[in-house]
Image (cartoon, rainbow over all chains, first blue to last red; front, top):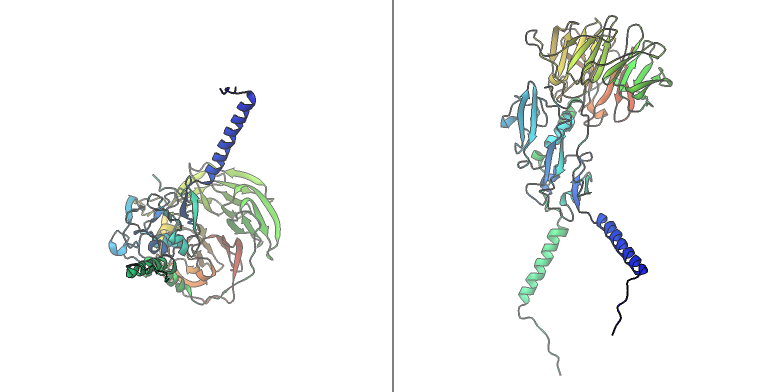
Length: 188
Length: 335
């Protein structure tokens, strides 16, 4: 007949140390295995247009965003209008976007708000380049994480000429534009 | 005894599978052309806009001055020809040879500088103005102009001072105690004033050689001349991608007058420095074109010295670039 061993203080300490060690190891490993997502750095982007054609999804998971606190709300918006447009209005012949994904909305004279309809946006970056060269540079591209299928090797990243794609942590999946926000909004 | 040879009953199926696997491999790995390159409808080509300023210029670039202040943003030249460059917390002073001769500490980031006719230095510090005496000591500070103020330019004559407030999209006329006398440039249909449109923090003004105040209306891509009481005298706008106009949503970013009373303008985006006859707004000549600057950049400030040299504070190169006329300008009849 076997005798049941009594749990002494030393055994208890050993057990507690084992539990603590396991917990610490799990926490350390857990941090390293946080899910990573592909994202593009707008500061490096050269608006080459490959985000439209080189994504495995159609339309691309790369979308244009407008950082409203940098936007000038210009009447003559180069991101919205074809260069040399005869009229500053919403006529299709005046619009720069190939899919008419930008909505121009009157705020107050002479300021307009420009909103991107992401379901129409194909990520070509024509508006991004035009706004950067001629305007305040408030348009920029980002991979929409709710659309992206997070390929092991992103096919746009592979072909990006400016090497602006990298993997970012799940906790911080976007690279928002920063800039001069002195003139945040048109006066009320 | 002959050993039996194991043969498949369907060799063509195996062959097809091998070919399919090989084809799939080449499709995924080896075929680099599976994605088409973006065509011209998906790419914004700015070369054609850059090429409009491929014209001869009589200005040659000289040796630049590299200011040692942090975040250089503003420039001004005093009566003795010394260059003052303002940045975060300091103003550096350079003599005609480009050597730094002194340094003035300021409480904040200098956004613009201006000398009064009696030699005081007015320093725009975003939302306030510091008045420095001839000994560079602070005599007074003017503040509390509005809830949100960004002073981007100062113009002063013997009686009063004008402050370009980009955040409130108007020019503040103040006395030498810093008290606001009136606002200039707010839209007023009854007085035929269209209103200043300022979509970005670039908003400049200057006195011409007759003492008239010219204010840039950047959103309308032109200039407006005002009286002290806020009445508009005249205006002209040149929205155009051609060389004789101003491109982009908000230009020119900086203006100054040369010794001949001609208007020198500087644009952002595609940086171009040009000279105009101010009354008619007629283009006269190019000082420097966009090929000399990075695309999509702005300059922090521009001044013209007594020798008609154009000094441009290049924010990318962090240097004061100097463009010197090689030959006198050809006289043109004023229309």
